[in-house]
Image (cartoon, rainbow, N blue to C red; front, side, top):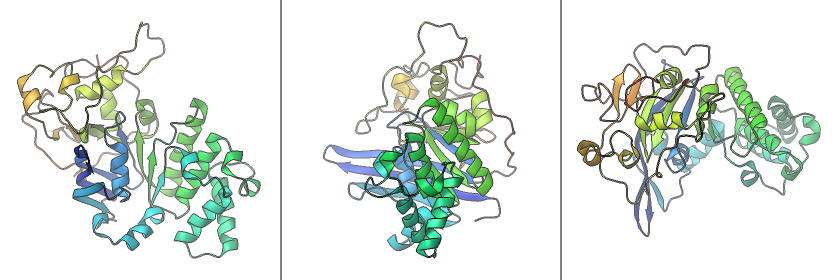
Length: 367
């Protein structure tokens, strides 16, 4: 790992899928950085490329039809795209752990959960079977499962959804990774259990000095746990900055639309605001800015309809890809995967959701 604390650098990542109907660009030129002990959130609607980005980092994209056809994925300075398959298997679980979306589709229903944790432990750590079982019980205790010595011999169907997700976290931690990727870890859980799982991940992050990459569509989750945020739309990053800056001044019209769609206590409104339309079909992305057909600002502007904006640093540590953001044309296309010269530590307090919907003017603070 570099002296500046950088754990992961994704530079210009491109991942595509060859289908019978044509080439699908699922991830197109994505760049970001995750530091040791930082929680980095990747946000956006379904189909934006968030999970494919995570699978690309772990080289789990099925080939064929998938192909990582450009960029670099530097983990502690090593390009994961250049490692052999055998070396990459050591990285998965041993150095980078992953929590998948739905535990029942990831846990094997015919084996006790403890056996599955033991398997992960022995894959990455040279310990005896007896010691691996002791470590499995200890991991179940660490992730907050009561009576772990009893639960270690139970099967997935005997556990609640929240407990199954805790088992998935235990498996992800079994190899003592330094980076944890959590792909929508609370989607299938009720609100109370969601909060407990998020608190658990945050506690483990602090205790182990873990880097965390959190994939989510829920901005309230981002406000709770994230330090930095990238908003993805249609295979690209639309906006990237630290969490407090994003919540104080969302710049991209897509980000502003996401904030407008959040329900707020005490707000007297008949209908929640929505972003019209859908994420475009990746086989037929529109010309120009991919968001312009749904954009309240640029849907009829000639430049937005014809020329795609690149990601530019429109303010210190704040990147956006929108022609209509204030200062965009004077800004430069710096690399967000590079560590900043003077990295500001995030404030201890959590950001608040904007008190009202952000203005329709890109670059404007919430009104």
